[in-house]
Image 1 (cartoon, rainbow, N blue to C red):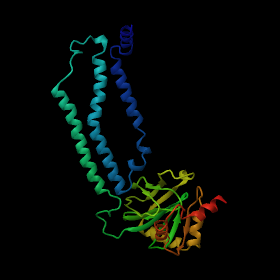
Image 2: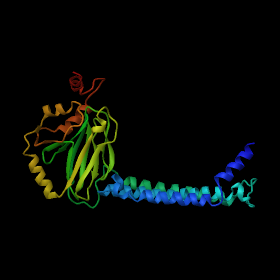
Image 3: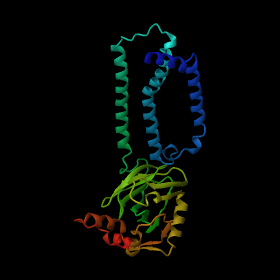
Image 4: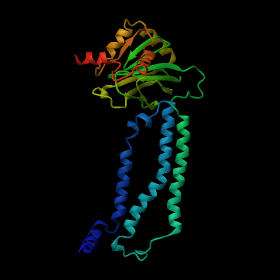
Length: 315
């Protein structure tokens, strides 16, 4: 009974030329669907920085290596179905055939070689793109930015310029930027500027370092990639990459802001809030970044270092 049903379905599903027509239609649909993709590339697929470009190259190199196995398997899947369909009455069909040293050597050797090449390639690039290492080829001193993940916003401190911003980052084009990152009064967060590269985590009591460089002037999106509470989806910020001369003009303008980032104003930022608009501080009065790290490193016991801020939020 099942044999008769199988034969009937085979004749219906695979009439002469149907597989060829199906492959042509699927291939045409696939090509057409890709025609508009270039305009919508974002993140790593549209890199605007050295690290993101290297990450995209590694991605496509590994994809190409894996396709050496994937593409033949896909082709053979369709070819075998078409060649051995019951209506063909194929003479070379050998249901009792079970072993071949040559074929087994081929389909084991090729994946093993590919895995070995991928392992070497990934190991090499992992060390070359280590986030904490300075980038080679940039003789100028890195531009320093301190980033603190707060609930649920980002605070950026420019230690050499003595200014700060909330949910807004401006950096010079073509210059290496060294980020020092930590978190305060919020669980572990993930700092990521997709078009510049290297997503990295921020953790309480720890200083995480990240080196990036932007190659093109523009406005890019930054975000938090680690779920850390109710306001997670609002932890976005704009990254403005500008010419060095425009960067200095912006710094001079920010310094005119009457807002000052002091210990008291920082405590207000510790209170959880959603969707905060960009805010500028024309003066930073204390070493807030190092103080945050020291607060968590020196805390002990079950009491949270920011317990007062948590109680204030509940009230």
